[in-house]
Amino acid sequence: MKDRLKAIREEALAQIEEADVLDRLNEVRVNFLGKKGQLTALLKSMKNIAPEDRPAFGQLVNETRSQIEAVLEESKKKLEQQALELQLKSEVIDVTLPAKKNNVGHRHPNTIAREDVERIFIGMGYEVVEGPEVEYDLYNFEKLNIPANHPAKDEQDTFYINKEIVLRTQTSPVQARVMEQGKLPIRMIAPGRVFRSDEVDATHSPSFHQIEGLVVDKNITFADLKGTLEQFAKELFGENTKTKFRPHHFPFTEPSAEVDVSCFKCGGSGCRFCKGSGWIEILGCGMVHPHVLEMCGIDPEVYTGFAFGVGLERIALLKYEIDDMRLLYENDARFLKQF
Ligand code: DAH
Image (cartoon, rainbow, N blue to C red):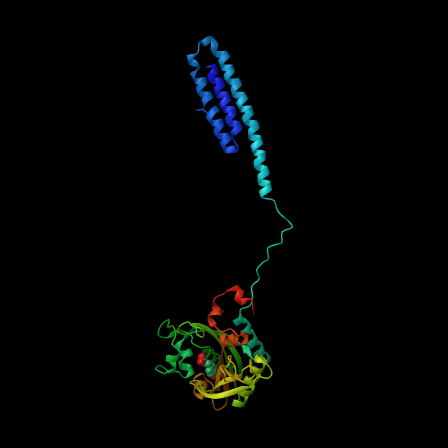
């Protein structure tokens, strides 16, 4: 029995010596001193010893137990200290490291272009208004002289919520909404998102932006329209920009025109940018159709007006010489940061 006790003690001390983490040390403790441990088992087997030898043997077992406990405790302290040192080392804060910078966002080229256009028209005394993106067919088409079955509806195929409600194909319906309110004169621009069921490519997207313009007052003529848009083009693209009005057709204006500006890259001599023509198309415009005025409750015998519609992406792409519209919607910060 004594030999067995000695063996247990030596084995325990050796294992404690070897234990290099606290968990392992705990295993050793359970293995030797626990309820089912080796030393406890030895105590239980005392009944095999002669009664007179029992007290002496019991004492011996207890001494061994104390010894093992003392060594265990010492080793535990040592390992705890080591663990603490390791933790302190790994969690050290290096106050000399450069701080992490907060990534500050950047205005989108579309936003920059829209704010440029807004600034120019606000400078001319225009008001900035908004209209709904989900719009009645009535405002998007009917009140703009585009009745059911009009071919213009084909060109502006869109997403239908139901027979009467569509995602607006243009910002022009805001014209009708503002005119209907009956507060004259009107001088407004209406920027916003529009939708068409177009396939995505370098120049098309099912969702893009326009800026609508509308002026209604007494004695407004085509000369006012020309002067206004010429001034706008100069402020947007530079003082030397020339403007050209080409006859066109829009259902809600009569007469109508498309406006080209002289290429701000080559000055009009022709380059890759303007496809050699020296001119770049930027917007559609015209005198508000008398029938449109009438449908919106304005007497065309007393009032006249002009209107125009600019594609916002087109302006952004031109101004920043971006050759693919899709880049505007990818939200790649490396791209957006350039503008
Ligand atoms: N809404 C037209 C389009 O999407 C653009 C336009 C042309 C607007 C002439 C106007 C205008 O106000 O007078 O093609």
